[in-house]
Length: 486
Ligand SMILES: Cc1cc2nc3c(=O)[nH]c(=O)nc-3n(C[C@H](O)[C@H](O)[C@H](O)COP(=O)(O)OP(=O)(O)OC[C@H]3O[C@@H](n4cnc5c(N)ncnc54)[C@H](O)[C@@H]3O)c2cc1C
Image (tube, rainbow, N blue to C red; front, side):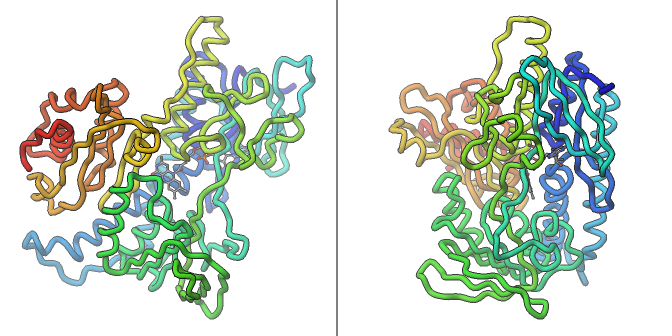
């Protein structure tokens, strides 16, 4: 007899594990099926985010930034250091410990919330029309079991997009997992792709001393960001020793020979170029993961790029089957995945209990984006080019970190914050930041937009002095041309 649940969640990344916990909190009998195994071959919850994504990358960004500060910046504070060196295996072991603490933490959260955790690959079996529940085959290394559930939440995430002529071996040609597990600093590091992952991975190894060359196919830099922010970022990064960013390139071939990776490409002027590096990271985006899920057998609808098609409430074309996170449209961000997971859990609970309730769609316009480079980049809402394209009249207020006392004290004066507000209503339409700790500062802007604040509302809020948050305050004041400290 197969076990029966109210909800089966397939995938325990930030979309799936959060959905499972919320379902269980709401009284639904819930199972979460996940196939991830770590490098030691052990089951490890948390998906890409915890195992080879958000958390390990931030651990290494923190370590490498500390090293960089001590080596190159603390002398300005009158602090002298000698023989500063880095023990990469220790740094990697620290990162691994953070990962295992968090992945084990999810197992504890499942226990606490009475979510049943099952390890193995989940496949939706073909369902008879008359059936009122789904059967999921779970295969754990040949040991199979069948689980029955009324509702299914698919949260199978994404996998790195591959470059056919640069197969990943995680020795010389690396994906994100390999880039997070290097045991020594490569002298010369190539990165294909100047997206978030490429920039963050490049930053880690550049701060530790690698000569980093980033090759990007798109003609511009950070094209998803506000143009002015992208320009500022490019200017700042261009001044950094050991970092070269080439946009508009066309990669012709990638070959390995004598411990060297040789990349042939044409540059933005159509000139043939060769780059030789010791390690190459391929970070050209991620694709939705639906392999072995039972898509064809059940007629689960995918779009032309392979994403599971869902409506604004994350409902698929199959009855009682929902999908969240990287496997569906929208930004590939952990917090977006989790938010969708919570929204579905609540919708399923209301349906199950026959309670009338408005389902809430996740509003992508107030999802914050962060790039953890130095300086950090963050934004929420619309940027200037989007507002212009949509014909929306707006006012802009801007304030630089260099005029902020706390930023000066920290010695982190690059960048600025820009607030965009509707010309007539003054409602905040977008906030764009580049500077120190903007990954934290952006939350105030998200909250302001969630509560439909005007720039005037933000201007009326008292901000602690001296703090970086005063830059946001002054940018909001700047919308009405009344910034005080510039
Ligand atoms: C290097 C890197 C850095 C990143 N940094 C950030 C960041 O700072 N902030 C941020 O918001 N986002 C970041 N991301 C993106 C973030 O990791 C993803 O958006 C997020 O993990 C998506 O969550 P998810 O639950 O949809 O899928 P995933 O986290 O990919 O989890 C999917 C899970 O489903 C499992 N699975 C798949 N198919 C099956 C099946 N058939 N049966 C059972 N299990 C299955 C997988 O093994 C996996 O465990 C980063 C990504 C990378 C690669």
